[in-house]
Image (cartoon, rainbow, N blue to C red; front, side, top):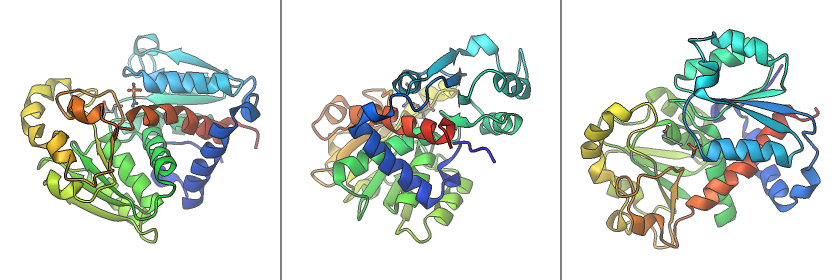
Length: 306
Ligand code: CP
Ligand code: NVA
């Protein structure tokens, strides 16, 4: 059966840790992996903008000996110029894998169903698994292990929050999520996380109180208040989310050595202030760098020789 990378919930605990371990190895000795995807081609479908995701998948393929082809939203006009299924059926005649960034999660599921190619989730409205894998790799790299760590997520219960919860469940972390009322993470994702975290030490708190969430946290994570596709809600959300801004005051309630984390792009002055994101505790560019290393491993596991 072919393998996709659509949600961290689909990974076994073994696979989750295997990705972490192999990323550490590959990051240390990149030269050893220079030809492992020789002559392989990845199609990258983007229905939303990107800096990090596009760069890291494209550079990652080059560093593994393969190539990537970028398909902009206006190129293939998924669903209007051509059906999702027909796109999947065409691509499998030319390339070895598909990466997709899209809106509805149903679109990636339909694409994966339509093709024998491995499909990688590069963000949907529901999930952003590559991001969370890179973030957890970064945490482990900084802290040495996941044991005993507490991660606080403050802001919107969105795609990034969902994938972080699923990673926390596999890693066995304590996680506290603080959102405004009505913006909590989706119950079906919370249920997946609880199922996955049953025997790992995972503990989840969901609250509307940001101070409670960041208390004793080893890392404080936030993301934009209005995600791509929610631009019309931007002004309303700005008012509702203001008490959830990660500023010096809120950040000082975490452990003194706590890390600040953000998937980027950041809206400085909204969800985070300059003094927090630019402080020595901020590891946002390490997270961005590690997107490259983690995704190289994911591509190798899906597209490399079996
Ligand atoms: N974090 C992230 O996915 O960044 P881009 O939207 O720039 O790809
Ligand atoms: N939640 C954000 C993440 C961007 C990387 C969005 O979906 O726009």
